[in-house]
Length: 309
Image 1 (cartoon, rainbow, N blue to C red):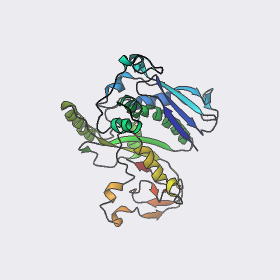
Image 2 (image 1 turned 180 degrees about the horizontal axis):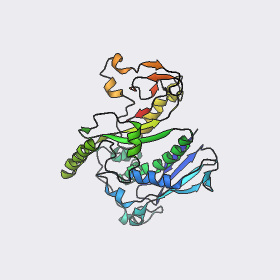
Image 3 (image 1 turned 120 degrees about the horizontal axis):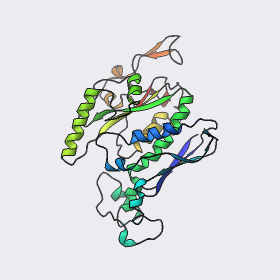
């Protein structure tokens, strides 16, 4: 059982990622970890903080001579902006006059709710930990998990399917997503060039008015065998676990598996994936005409691609 924790503040000295349960003998590709961190920092219209940091994964423990050794893995990500915050956020008491208070909480963020929870007079400590900067530590953990899944023939990639009112009008195949994620330059990580151009226009309109715009991304797991997860207990269903994991990301307010949202307004005959059988097909011989279930039925993988938005 893999388990991870993260620690650190947005403008603190560093972020720390901690992973336990990784088996021994897994080759760790440092360049792959750093490229995953690089991908996180790309994107048209990205915030200023993304331009400041150049994240590199500094492994402290659990990896020796290029391979995991079975013990917990700890990874450090330095915050390059820390030099500008050493007086404002010291570990010791410091000088209160240099503390950068946040007395105007932002709607849509944890500022006010967190300050009320801990009875803080302002929101600095809340936003420091609730910041999207924390996701950099999770990307590092995710990269290590991807290396493990590769050994089992499973690949996990993602792409953008909508920004504001601009959306993909077709399903993107796995080869197209794989080719997209190999690019050395990323705009909005959309596999369809015309759709990506429309998405860029949505971002431009928001920037011109000082506003922001939401969107939808899709994570695809390719090569997943049937039988992962369980239908036997509510808290062990794989779709429930995935929904919780994705919902825990900053700014995510909805999670969809397969055609989940459109399925709510459709008859069952248009939703359920018809089952066929061919001896030479897939893991078990069973086939599907489509994948509206997103690869999961009853909390268990069915051998199709897993798709989570």
